[in-house]
Length: 471
Image (cartoon, rainbow, N blue to C red; front, side):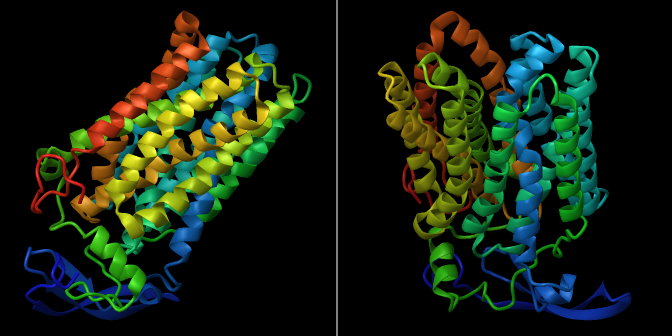
């Protein structure tokens, strides 16, 4: 890294004083700002304990808990479809479109929430409380909505918006506190969005029925909203431009893990505003690539149960496959984040797109020959690929455009789920027209196309090695 982006001329802007409150006493915190040769500013001198009174690892653990609190609304919802259909007499197509509406609003809120967060008008704690309220309203509406339209509003809109608040806050929080080694931490936090749903897949599939569905949904809603609210109560952002004092931003760090991560994923050359980030062209490429891959992921979540049942597997086995998919989906996010710190974000993203595409064809093959072990294996692989894409884009956005506006910049990228959320609703249309085999084949091809798009990504402001750069 000494010959790379960080070994630079050194400029100190002087010692400043900030104020933080610990134990109700205002204490001045001296810090200094240094600038590298690209003009990027780093704020040094304040420790994590100085800023919030606890180690920064808590800004990994608490966001992880918060993400688990919203995961079942997306990853376990398909498991409740049969009971909701029987209990409320809602059309199955309407229930799948309800999930699409949830994904739409979850993605739609990311950009405006990011703008409010970075302007200071929406503190992290307030965003999490709104998320907790939305989570509760969603489950209440599924339990008591007298008409499917009210369920669309309560679950699809309010729960989706609440989940979007939580997702955007949690993912961006960990990136701000670990700017020098964000891949593994971001992946770990992002993983909570998947495997937090595992127990609820079994509850909705094997325990909930038309006789107990109301109290089950209310109990789940109260519990999960409490999880989100309690975790969010302790959230705190670091100051703008903050950098851990123990990691020299201008010279190769002593920690070998931080050194390798910064060599493979050098920090952004400056803090890009949303408009500046958009003008680089990278946001559009990332948006399109995420739209493709997350659409495949959402489609797989929605129709994993259906293709397993069509293959003749028992309901309990299908629930096991869905749970395995969710577990690997979540743990895979942490694993790929760690690998991306070691081998590079873009390289891992390309590999994930290929794996996700191959898994769709593996699911078709294993279902067609009714081979249960292979079905479980390819379900797990599909879960890994479908989950791993999200921490890659979350970390890549901060790598390319900096941390100060990351909530807004990633909000632009993540808004692709406005389109990819159609993976459930449009998936129902494609399955009706082409059958499950045709729909899963299309999903695999879309993932391969996303891989081609990812080849054209490169960090803005740095030397490009041809049109297709593997840096």
